[in-house]
Length: 271
Image 1 (tube, helix red, strand yellow):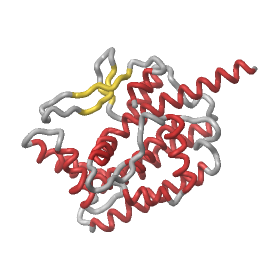
Image 2 (cartoon, helix red, strand yellow; image 1 turned 90 degrees about the vertical axis):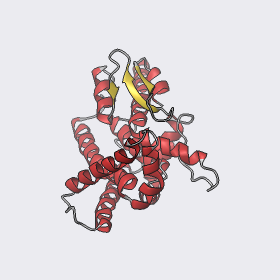
Image 3 (cartoon, one colour; image 1 turned 45 degrees about the vertical axis):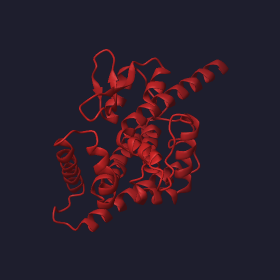
């Protein structure tokens, strides 16, 4: 996603494969050609794009910019946390998918240590975020997390209404952030609870599918549950879930920016 999309607007962001001693397997990462610096988080991507004067929000009012900040925080607090819970703390999902996926890129003994270490970090993050007791029943933790993510999806659905994008008729940075999370919910085999909640909000589900079709018809196939004997589609979905958030956000950001630039140029020509 990142190689093709960032190349369209002349940025020196590219996807490279990080080699290591994990049985010949590679991980996709984003790097800067001029410094070879890795870009590891969505906010790093946004900051880099802004530093290159690639803005998506020139058309927004002060109120809409404030809404962008508020919704971004809400999504991070709710949807991102729920995604992490689904992948790492849901016992069935962890044992059936996440553990094997994450450990497969490390050699022994790190393939045993790293999954447990990451799971412990995610648990601490979630307990801290919701001010929960470490001895709290896992069922109660799950209830708290999924209630929060469900409210977040409902708020986004209400805000979207019948508009093509969250803040109106033109895509913004907020749409990139929203879509990156919703696409992961739809594409990951480890998010059945979140996927059910999203599917009940028709306008938000259609919004995700519409952006996927318009901007990523060839770059991203939303996950469709495979037949049990066919493991290849499931493995592809696993790879998407492990690295998708950072790469997808970069791609959406640049595609939306290009679309906005074309709109502004067209408006100027008509004027």
